[in-house]
Length: 127
Length: 107
Image 1 (tube, rainbow over the protein chains, first blue to last red):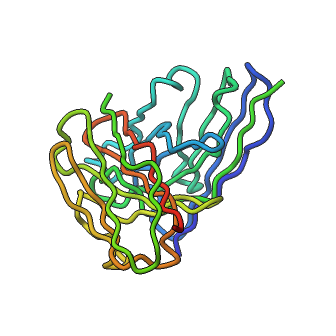
Image 2 (cartoon, each protein chain N blue to C red):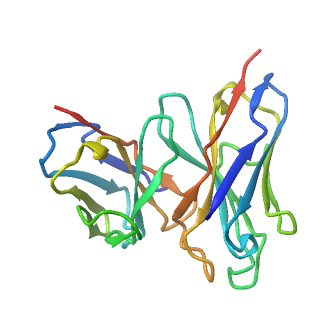
């Protein structure tokens, strides 16, 4: 059974940092592109960042970011620990959201849509 | 960036109704479109990929169509479990972008 378990959310001050983690199980984590998507309270879904897996033309670890987080957030993965991470620095009030990690539907090449999602972790940025 | 516009933002319907949600892209995205369902307090679930491909395990009452810039999600014979918010998402290009969502509520 595929499972994604996020952790690391909480309260941070503006300008502060948090590190989110997503521990995966039930599939070959290293093969899949993984993403972070966030949802501000009462709002819609916003893609945050993606990192490719080894199955993506053998060129795993390529990263992509939304302009709103570029230069502040860093996505990474530790395939030995089946863990996806999101290091969030210089946090702003507008980063307040539930953050979801999600697994790409395909392994040999990224499909860019996501069949399994974690339960989400809430990040609140406030003084 | 490719903008995704959904309509309506809210749709009132009854059990047994057939409903259609529209998603428009600001430029052609071929069929690089997915649909997700989200219930309050829960993560999204994938319904449709490649505009019309039904995700494994999803009821055949859900169907998607369209290409280029205009897409639709149709739910036939609406069931009580279908009352939720639905999002389209383009993946023609980064940044991946979602529509604003359509809430299907009880009439």
